[in-house]
Length: 314
Image 1 (cartoon, rainbow, N blue to C red):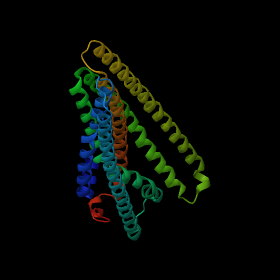
Image 2 (cartoon, rainbow, N blue to C red; image 1 turned 45 degrees about the vertical axis):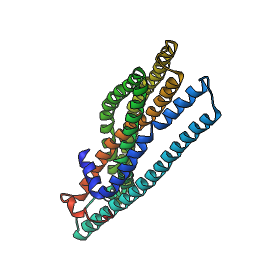
Image 3 (cartoon, one colour; image 1 turned 135 degrees about the vertical axis):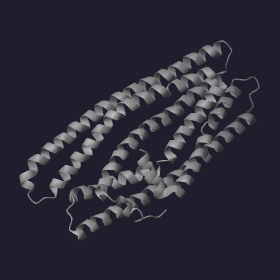
Image 4 (tube, one colour; image 1 turned 90 degrees about the vertical axis):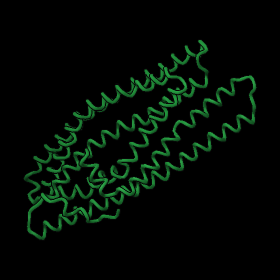
C-alpha cells in the first residue's frame, strides 16, 4: 500500500495538499449542523419559544450546510480532474512502453497491455484522485461527530465509538480473503485477453471459455465474503441505533440529558454510518488497487523509473 501511495504522491503532491486542506475544512464543519439541530429541538420544547430565535437558528444551520456543500463541490471537482489527469498520464506511459518494446523487437502480451491501457489505468487514476482527500474527509468527519456526541453526553459517545472497532476487525479479516480473489481474477482475465489476440482463436476457444468459468467462480466467492461482512456491519449499525435511543431515553427520564441531545446523537449516528461505510469500501478499494498497481508495474519491465516523467503534468 505504501508503495502505491508514494507513487501517487510523487505524481501529484502539490494538488493533493490542496485537496487535503479542503477535506479538513469539510470535516471541521461536519458536527456544526448537529449543534444547531440540538438547539432547535430544545428551543421548541422550552417555555419561551420565539419565532425570531427559531428563524435565526434555522438560517445559521442552512448557512453551514451550504458552505459545506460548496466545499464538497470544489473538492469533488478538483479530485475528479486530478484523477482524469493521472489516467491520461498512466496511459501515456503504457503507450510509450508498448512503442519501445515494438521498436526493440521484444515480444510482449498485447492483450494485457490493451486491458491495462483501457480499463486498469482508469481504475487506478480515479482512485489516485481521491487517495488522500477521501479518507481525510471521512476520518475527520468521524472524529468531529463522535467528539461532539461525547462532549454533550459521554455515554452516547461511547456507543457511537464502540460501533467502529468491530466493523474494522470484520473488514480486515474479510478483505484479506477478497484480495486473493481480486489478484486471481485480474491474472485470469489478462491471460484470457492475451489468448484472444492470437490468430488460432478456434483452437484455444475452449481454454478461454474455461477461464471465463474460473472468473465467474472467483467472483462468486468474493460475493460470499463481501455480502457476509456487509450483513454483520448492518447488524452492528442497527444495534448502535437501538442502543443510543434506549440509553438516551433513560437519561431523559432521569433528567440527566435533554431531548435535543438524544435527537442530535441519533442524527450523529446516522452521520458516522456514512463515513464508516465509505472507509470500509475505501479500504477494499485501496487493497484492490494495490494489487492492480503491482501487476501494472510488471508491464514496465525491470526499469519502471525510466517512464516516470512521461505525461507528468503536476
